[in-house]
Length: 520
Image (tube, rainbow, N blue to C red; front, side, top):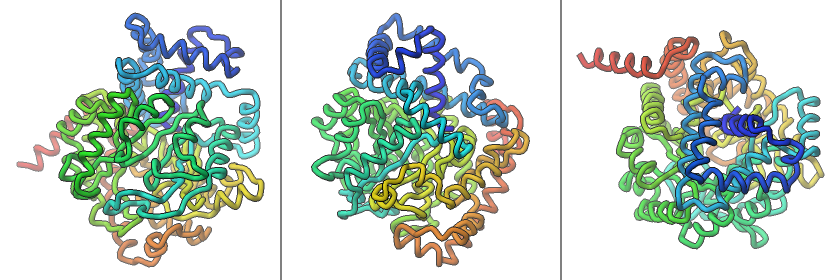
């Protein structure tokens, strides 16, 4: 399950509570009509508080969040509750902004209705999936349609740069269509390379969003190509939200991304803000920028002044171009980031999520097409369990050309092995048997186990760095050492604050007491 489930659940609750006739909503006309009505209502000064209150009522008790998966450790329910409330408030802040056009509000509601109320054909396909595989459906895809990038960032996980490697338009479109029709998923994450460079058959990301109006696209971008004209087009489309990469402030960002990039990023944010396009920030956490990105000044600037709607934190992973363990957070730094992001969420009421540290909120690893999770597809059509696991057992182009389906991709033994590991680790376990979801990542937190899976299934390394890592003994020793140290430290927190109920106020106070004790 992902945080999308929280948002979808609140919308469904609101619809049901108002007695809306579901038969009407399963028609395209009905969905578009209600999306337009809610797009107007949510901006009305009198109606907005009523709508927001109806949705928040769904989250007024932590136990209401547990309906998404009943057996969860108490700390996981708490995390989902807090993140869900933050997401609702962050979205509402953008929806009621006077600059947000009706097209943006309408697209968001249409996406929710398409997800919650699929047509009969899609409902049948979803039922057939569950009957055949006995599994929850994946929630989305992450697709990097092109490797080309106009920057050359240090330590880029994708190793992007000048390149002609890209997915053909027909294969790209097939993927999105298959996901919609067979999984009923309407959320597409686009990465790269720089996504706005991608062109195939004269078409790019915006044309894909135009064709799939009922889906919602989050695009990870360096932001340097978002001028006023592009911002206006994004506003007209309404179903695309850029997540702009930042490393902190100007000096830190330019040091990794290139001189002058920060100024172009800020200009892009202003263009989006003025056009009323909701956007987010995407931050790579390293040992070098950790304290900067967790500072109050950082949060105040990006969320208050620049008006970012949401934020994602991706801790540096030693993969891709010139991979190194020197950038990766050590065990204590990773737990410091865990504490500081929760403080930011609670104090500012903003949605910012850490792909690793918020594992408890999404019930562990979401890779390999787990229920609510995803698969990753790169520019060559290679499919991997995760953006940060560069090993592929199957290629989209081969499945597409043979007349296969997206389920043929999902059903690969390598992916199935990872899903079994997820279930055994806790996803299908009673709450008191769930293992430490603060260490959810197979390749990073359980590296030796991951190596065994590679030996068993022999997926193809998708680049030279992935091949090199297989032979790098120093890399393996470093990952193993990190796993031991982090497993011990995070395990103590898991046992203390997740296996039993513990409010964040208590957690933070105990942390402060420990820090004071160390200082004496």
